[in-house]
Image (cartoon, rainbow, N blue to C red):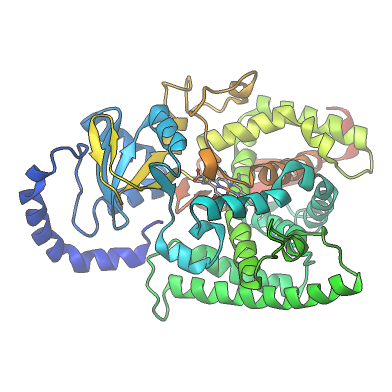
Length: 484
Ligand code: HEM
């Protein structure tokens, strides 16, 4: 969760109280000798403001590096977003956390997120999470996704023809965002473009914008807008469910046509189907979890390809080869397997700009690590971003270099854009599919240049170019492609 301007006002209000509590905190510090080194910052606020400010300036890594230098290479303590936190640095810390999921630690989300997404996977732990993940993965695994590649290809094609062709300059980020929302609508609920999809998108944006803000459920706050947005999304999903039940009964819809049909028809081992409320909550969760993460990856990849012409030429060569072999036919799953260099370039983008910069767990018991005790109930945090940028694991870490992913690629526990362990992102194959199909279509149909090569990136809560990545575009002719 990130601190917005709302929090600045709140922080001023608690400053005096914080000063008093800080003194109190210091006086009891001597009793906590086994805790990791570090500072808890201001009471109530902890170090949240520094953390949020550095992320917004795209310097999230500095937060970790400063503490690593000051308090040691393995672990330190801090206080963020209302909780005491132990930061575990580097691949050893990540390995420890992944191998102790459900034993010492558990996945955790802020309670405001769990409230918004009701009975979705975000709020589940232990066996409940395992069962629900297994259900969702039946839809998200490669074997199930293969049949959707052609649909994704044709939606992307239509969107680019309508929104990009004939334009000289566009903002890539919002265009890619809208395009991938249409893809998700088609694959999740078979909702075509039109007024209802536009309405769903407006509520989706309210939810997306407000869900990570200060959770004040008051008139006018972004969090209140997110609550209203989530309820409106549920209302629309309810109408789609009612229609789908009729269509399934009459045979005009199939049980495998999309996520909605799958969740309505799928039976667990006791023969029960998922409750309607849970179907709505989980579809809404997947819409959110899978969206900006993929959008950011495509957007930043366009930026890196514009800045690294050798890599661009390599991606172009690979994609044009595939396009020529396909002719007018739609892309298929087997074509994605041929996009090896392009996927390496996408992975390198995920290394430099992991959409989820850090990942959280909760201590289920008192944990002994690195000579210190992490008390039960504390949050544990590892930084994907810092690990990805560490010179210990990646030579010249700021350089965009897809060749890092050749052969065996990076060492274990050093490249984790999708997290890891039992709670690793279940949407990684879905993400790979939509990213590759979109890049294929953009690269084979357009050339682009950045309008501002120095455009800054801000992380709030995910990385994004501050002006939406304006690009100048030109349609590629068949002749120019043949010459490639
Ligand atoms: C480039 C795209 C994506 C990235 C970088 C990404 C990254 C992540 C990360 C870092 C986590 C947390 C993992 C952990 O706690 O260890 C996560 C969780 C999750 N992601 Fe993704 N994700 C992406 C796309 C998707 C897509 C397309 C979907 C669904 C269609 C999806 C669904 C989920 C869900 C449901 C969770 C929660 C899993 C759980 O709590 O067990 N993600 N993702």
